Length: 261
Image (cartoon, rainbow, N blue to C red):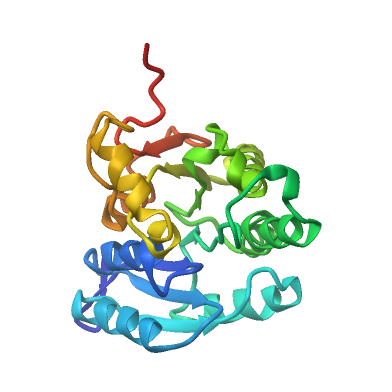
């Protein structure tokens, strides 16, 4: 971290889907380190304003960029504005994602639901990452450039009541490996985080069910995961301290993925 005109200059971080939930908590964790945040979301509302105010309160600067990452035509402008907001970009966090509109029998899943999940959870992040990576490769190398993809425990654990969501997150897992391979020579690290049961708006619709299952030992750590649990790991992975690591998966799930007998 350097100092410019009396202000410590940290990294510049673009987080998609950052107006609430895991995205907001991650933005706050970066802000506490003095980093500057580009907050992207498809909606600009009071929740977005709360996120921006929270970043400022924690010592970071913030710039909101309204855009739907599923709209590939918006990526060029989104990337240009992200790089221009604070004079560059150091970290991309692909956090934006949606769940199924209605949980139910996978035999009743619709093409419309499948296509929407893939557009937001996989197609959008893949091509946004492509656009950011191309920009980085045109510029001079810089230390600690990195990408973090927020996947899910459903990248390896099947839930037949939201099959299309699971498939989209499997794609994110492979996307992480592919970009890690492609960008390693340029010194750009790519990581994947697989959250487990996290207390967000996405899980609110099944909160009672999860409360019961957690109490019964769904995960060895018997509590809800919090968005802050994920945010702290994102900041750690992008710190530049893991210089000989890329393509790694970090589970933030209370031990949910551990096979038990």
